[in-house]
Image (cartoon, rainbow, N blue to C red; front, side, top):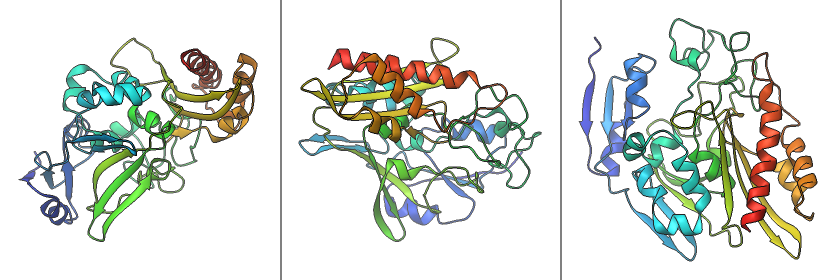
Length: 326
């Protein structure tokens, strides 16, 4: 049994000071951290409880929304202003986990949840994310659930979040506070590709604390669709998910937001597909070409080749649904 120290803090300054220690980590809902501690994949010497921090508000105004890092996933999903103005986010949250977990999980924790790659969670196997330099058992192992976009020869673990896929499509920004002050990080820059260092998953520095997520108003994009394809109807991670939003005017697509989950090593913004859509009529043929562009860089492995076609079809379905809603 490993000894673990526990500290509960009441303000951000105390949290930052406490987590400056090398073996300290923040704990909020704990829905990921506690699991990984039980498996001894993560072995912090101290957990710093941030549940008492005043970061649990959802503030909505004409310039957008500010969502505190301690807001529970259920509260965010059912917030009337979020449902009305950013329904895509509500749909994505409700597609994730179970009601019990959503009641505990926080926005900040969701941003930082770690992969569900079985090799990462099994200490008997090689994993560069868990043990840098040990190798990646998924490359030549059973890789049905793994990423086809953004991987490297060091790691192909898929990012697990539903919420983050919606945030990517909505141009969210992550608000961070650390020893050097506050900064705002666009959601597309927050998570890192594995590259040579898959153990580094975000731009957060040691001790930095996520304080909020902000959403721009994105007028005209209020109607969107989130589609999640999985092995069972609930409490399962995505094989493929798609967050889509269109701004259509005069029979033409004037703006497009498209992000993918289940297929990328981070929440995947399909920029090339968006470019293909803008200026064209919202037809199934155009959607199919955009889907092809979104998957042009895919590098499937032996057991996840089906994700390429599955993702293409899901993109077309999500865009067609969004067209109908608009």
